[in-house]
Length: 74
Image 1 (cartoon, rainbow, N blue to C red):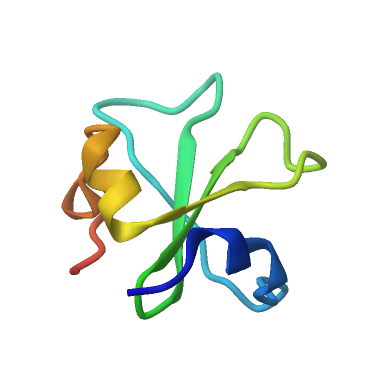
Image 2: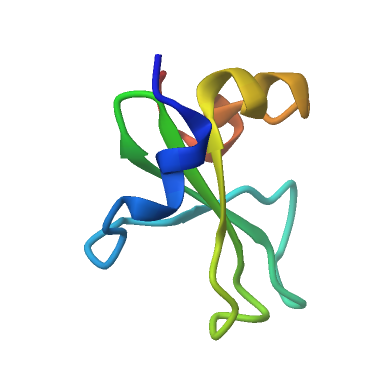
């Protein structure tokens, strides 16, 4: 398991973010990217200049965020 304190050391410059939308995303959506074996970055398409928050898989699950909703398999 990845040490959560190391998440911000990971390079995410090449990360591919996907949106999770239940309908039209006219006002922006939450975005998610896998950035490692046990690491995720969560962003906001309305605020692309803000650095995405980073989570371990366990933290993501505890927060109730399912990568499948973004079309990403775990």
